Image 1 (cartoon, helix red, strand yellow):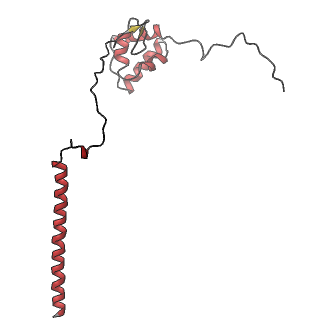
Image 2 (cartoon, helix red, strand yellow):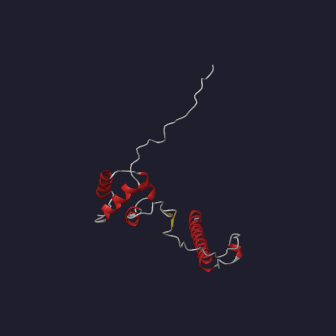
Image 3 (spheres, one colour):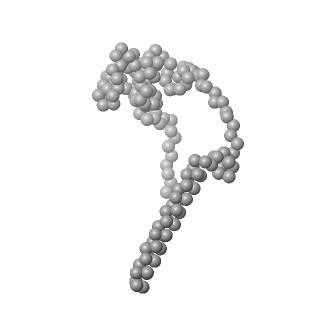
Length: 161
């Protein structure tokens, strides 16, 4: 008999424990939902200290295609026939500096363009190809010098030990 009462008491306690646990979970979820959906985010208690902000107008760049001293300001290209076509077809994929530093002859430019079309998804340039190659060869021809000019007029001296 004592074991029956003990078993009943144990079952009752488990039932009460489950009810308290369930009630706690419901209250916690309700509290989270209340905070998430009902609290006004503009209340200063919930905001971090933020500095006052001011709306500033950013000037629109009117000089997008400005030429200064014969150089296109945005790209650095020399202002000459074919510059626009070169900007439109080359700078969509890479920097103008990459084009300027690669000084090549017409044959090498043609090979490079063909390589870009085969491997880099460059579109068919059509009539612009000849215009672009002519622009690049005329304004950025291969240099015959090395990295620097040969040193001249140097007064050498003997190091003493």
